[in-house]
Amino acid sequence: GLHVDGTLHLLLGGDGKSADFMPLQRYLSGNNIRLYCFGRDGAQLAALRPDVAEQTETMEQAMRLLAPRVKPG
Image (tube, rainbow, N blue to C red; front, side, top):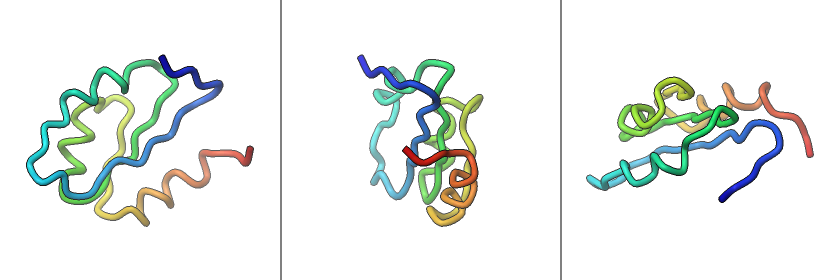
């Protein structure tokens, strides 16, 4: 499995063209993950882990939320 020191910040979004996102859920477990969901399917993606997800309209808005929460390196 994936091992990450610290918090994993993921940008998820766009138009999944009716894709089933449920298979992603198993990769989004754990306490050290944050999701930034945007675009047409942002709500559906955020629903995979609503406890750690934030939803925005655009990727730019998601990046503005994410940027102050990460550190270089």
